[in-house]
Image 1 (cartoon, rainbow, N blue to C red):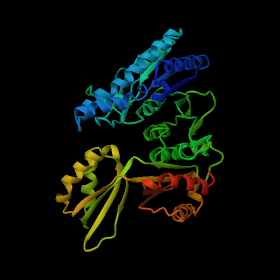
Image 2: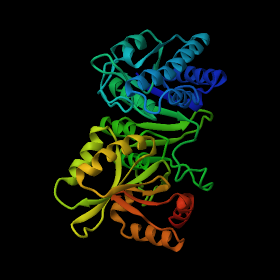
Image 3: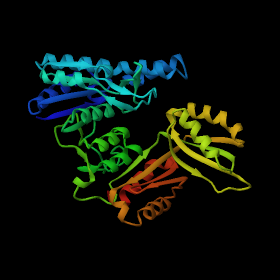
Image 4: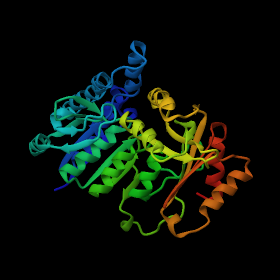
Length: 402
C-alpha cells in the first residue's frame, strides 16, 4: 500500500485554471497511488498582498495578528482544490493545520513543528478520499494559530509524510528540479538528477529557494525521500535522498546566491568575555536568525563584530542593536544591505583540497572583493558587494564546470 504527499506551491495554484490542472494531476496520481495527501500554498502572490495590506496599517504589526492574517491564504487554495477534485469525481476533503493537529511552538511567524497528530487524515484516507491540507500553518498547544515562515508549506508536507510513513514526498514547483545554479542568472545551469539531504540543506540555507531549509532537515531526520519536480511538465525532477543511496558524489554540486541578507556591524565593542553572548543572546530572544558571524582582531581592547541577517528582519535587528550599543559599551553600529552571499556546495569537497583556493582565486581574478567568509565540510560561502553578485555566480559556475 503506497502513500504519497504532494505539495503544490503558489505558482502552481495561482488561478482557477491552474487549480483545475493540479486537480487533474492529483486524480491521475490517485490511479497509481493508494493514498494521496496534498499540501497547498496560498494562491500566487496572495501572501505578498496580505503583507502589503498589513504594511498599510502598521510598520510593525503584532506577530500574532500577522499569523492570523497570513494563515487565511492557504485556506482559500485548499478549499478551492478540494472543490475541483470533487468536481472531477474524486472525493476530497480540505483541512487546516489545526484540524490536522500540526502542533507548533509559540514562535509566531517562524514557528517550528513539535508534533503532527494526523489521526483524522488517516481516517479520511481510509474512506478513499484525497486530503487537501493548508500548508504553512499550525497551532500551539494553547490553540493559537501560527505560521512557519517563507516556504513553510514544504515543511508541512514533509512533516505529514514523516507522520504518515509515506513512501515519498513530492514538491511540485514552477521549475523542473534543483539546478546547479539559478537558471535566471546562469542560463547554462543544468538540472541535478539526485542530491543528498546535507547538500540540499546547505543549498536551501544559502539561497536556493526551491525548498525551505527546515523541510530538508525534517526529511533528513525522518529519512523521507523528496522529489522536486515541475507542476507543468510530467518528467522526472530531482531526488533528494540519503548520501549512502547516491553512487557518484560531485566535488561541487552547485553555486547558490542570496541577495536577501544584510550585514550588521557593531563597532568598537569592548573585547572581554560575555559581550558576544549578550549580543547574540538578545538577537535570539527576539527570534532573529543570524547567519554568518565574524569578529575582527582586537585593537586597544576593542573589536568589531559583524553578522548577517535577513533583510526581512532588519527593523527588529535595528531595534535590538539600538538598545544594546550603549549597554555593551560599544561605539556604534553600521548597516549594509547592499551585499550578496555566494556559496559553493558539494559533498565531494570534504575529500578534495583546493576548492576554497579555487573559489577565492576566481573571484580575485574577476576583481570581486570578499567581505566575509564562512565554511562547513561541504560548503564555502563568501559575502561580496551586491553589484558583483550575479557576476560571481557566473564565473564560479564556469570555473568549476558545473
